[in-house]
Image 1: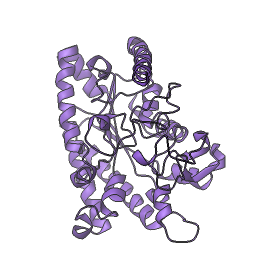
Image 2 (image 1 turned 30 degrees about the vertical axis):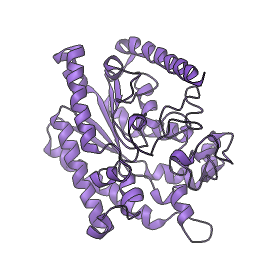
Image 3 (image 1 turned 180 degrees about the horizontal axis):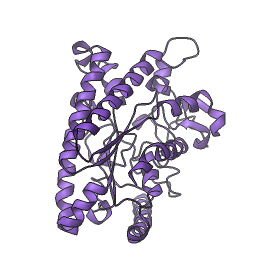
Length: 356
């Protein structure tokens, strides 16, 4: 019975998406939205992986487009890139490339290659056996081939060059890898030199997709990872304040990404590369939650809100809140849908609207 309900919900979402596909030719401001990154934008690619880091079960997705379907997004509803897509006049979601419910006709106007738990550093993806960024590029190459077969070379090339690329990645390299001592990186690098290492990896990735035809690229900066409920709970200081050392690294990362972007804009003809700075906005939300309609910015909605995420945030987890819209965070790491919408609206105004 449950399988039948899930199938019906999936079909409902596909019908909505088909409506948007049919209306795209008239209304869309860009031909497609193409997404790379981690759990902040993963639309369900991890569902098919042999990894423990998944979110395709309740209570994840309980507010997803009125269906309550757990799609694999690490939120109670949609993620920021879903809102970007809708604001561009495409459709209300960006489907995961590995989701068997979708095919190339769906991916032609939007596709997500992101994988929860991954990072710029290949060693980060190894921690939880998820899709490394280089593998996401391989999937993107495959997508280009399929797109050309479906639409023809000329139209496919137009979508690749005129489509918008949203990249959200980097936090896991620190909270899951470097600061968690999950690999030897903490022995190889200081925090400062590791930031520079990640900057170089980001530059190489952007050059790669540029060589494959990408031109309109938005790279989302890092938020204050020291203010994630998971990290605050680990802070032994009374009251569990944000970990400033982590936030300082995030600010340094953002500065290095901006420097890198400025250099590539000069070096690569035709590229429109922008860093989408979100640090200050999220810090303001966390410090002044009531100004944005929130009641809680310290804990996640799921469970105690201090450590639950992935399988630890499930339908049997006690203490989960009844109204996620009152919380800045859905689980101990990821924003609620309401926060995702606020971030998306802000970054659309400051960054992604520039690609229209």
